[in-house]
Image 1 (cartoon, rainbow, N blue to C red):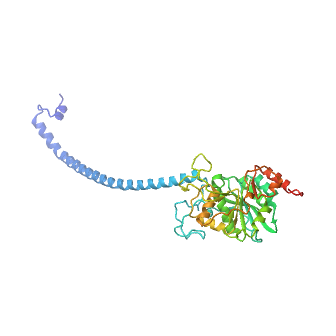
Image 2 (cartoon, helix red, strand yellow):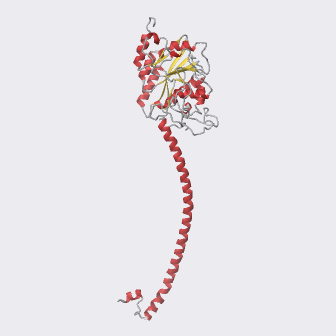
Length: 393
């Protein structure tokens, strides 16, 4: 065995003088290194203990913050997913206030008082992007016909302009016809330019920035009410009438001129009583309980065409601040009426507000006020025949 190996292993055959010499030479540096290592180990151990304590404290705080953030995130996610599932409105809306958000009273003159909450149907969440604000400035209409229509449905608008919409004076009364549109969404520059040109020609388009979809018809109707309340408050009556309707405008004005027809708090049309709320998710008329919990709707007038005294639009706007949105627009108006302590009135002649009950007959159509049609061309054909000079019956 070599001398070096015997030194390492402490072999007894190594002489004592050599051991003593090596011990004397190495003892002092070795001791210093040992002390240094011991100090370093103690410092490292102390540092680890402190690090563990700090990490444990921070972990509890972070966990609490994480749990809180996660809870808030899930609340927001649930609200947002429900909003887009039921109400496909434009997603960029700085002023839109969700249903659970209390309104501040210092930001805008249309803000609700403290304690009242905005809802999706509150029309002042939205903004007019095309308007004709002057149409009621230089005249006081007796009746304003407001027609909700899709932006791309120019055929329906043109058919109305050629028929009942072209009547500007009926039975000596000023009548105004306007079309209410929403936004088609996205950057449809070409369509928007066509709408601009159409409005420059006819001056009868009003467009708001809500998303124009079937589920947003309640929003559309409430925006109509807001426009009437803010742009044409001096009119005597208003009418929301769908774009696929035949309207005998003479019969309507004659009815409104009857002394028995109230001038305030009045709404009439084809009335619906005790209608159940549809809970089947497969139906286009489905309304979940969280939006409207009652099993039946209050009495309401079918949305195909209902007439109202023009004091009601502002009241509908106010009511919508505290009534949850649901997508059955005519029933929503009925709920607003109920909240105000009012009920729709039966028309003087209920048979004048028709649906699909009969085929075209010139004598019969001369007596109705409304009737649902199948196409814009059908409206033109029926109107042309009705306006022939010979007596209809």
